[in-house]
Image 1: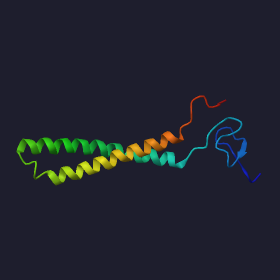
Image 2: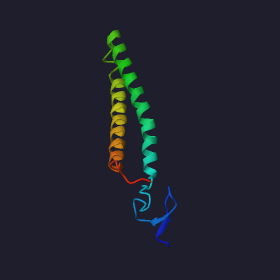
Image 3: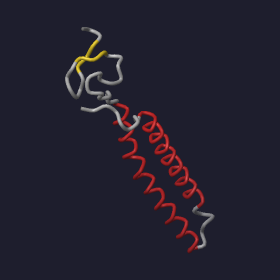
Image 4: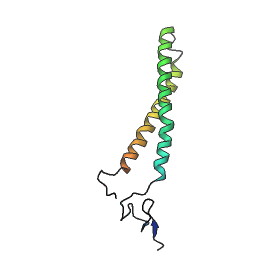
Length: 107
């Protein structure tokens, strides 16, 4: 039985290459799923912080009449915002690829 392993949910033996347990239908969990949640846990607060700082810099600079002097800082935070937003979109798209349709066989 070297080509089998126990199911994480029901404990029955299943082939190592099988994505689902033939008995209970449980799908093997991926470590990348947890990495994706960790990345989202970092990227979303960075996105919120960058949004707040961009708003503050733009409003303060407009009020003071120094929008030209704040240009490099605003450009930096726009770059950070775009990077965090792209990270969120990429991780979300990858998680959508691994989702299964509803109605999967469960016990």
